[in-house]
Amino acid sequence: MGLDLTLFMADWEYLSAVPVENRVQALDDAAWSPELDDEYQGGGRPDGWLWPPDRGSVWCVEYSFFTTTGSYRPHARAGDAWADMRLLVGATLREAIDTLLIGLIWDADPADDPALTGGGGFFPSATDRWRPRVLLVCPPEAVPGKARAWARVESHLEALREPFAAECEGWAGRPDTFEDFTALLREWGDVTTEAARRGWGLVGLP
Image: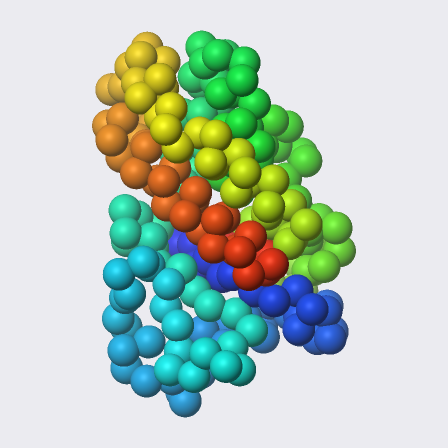
């Protein structure tokens, strides 16, 4: 079985009051609380966000990707595709997509992956074998820059078609089609836009 990704948009101020070693568990508990109704537990929303019935007390919310059925593999494949094709993309667009994707599904240097250090210590690091790990961490201060980058990228996605065809099309371990690749980018654009609007961060759990 492959690795899954559960993505949360979360209020860092609320999480900061939770002991570091308990923050991943707090997210898990919020997602699987028995108090939440069946619609939240298993149902989606038109925009992908799975809001509990009472939004007034909500400090985190899960996003259900339309294009991945919960698997982490499409995100990893899209990140690898971007690594393959990015040098064929014009500098301005390349910089914007780098800004959007870095720390989410791509890192210029994998050793700089914020999930490895728990997002600067906000979560337990991946090297702590006794604590649950995280797949990605994007703190609130990084989200607005990603949302602005997406605003620059969104209308220029077609410019990626030829680079994708040259470096990724037909290769195992890459998105099956250009449309699959850009659909996932659009979802990340929507996610970062909403998180920026609320001033919250993003956390991905396996």
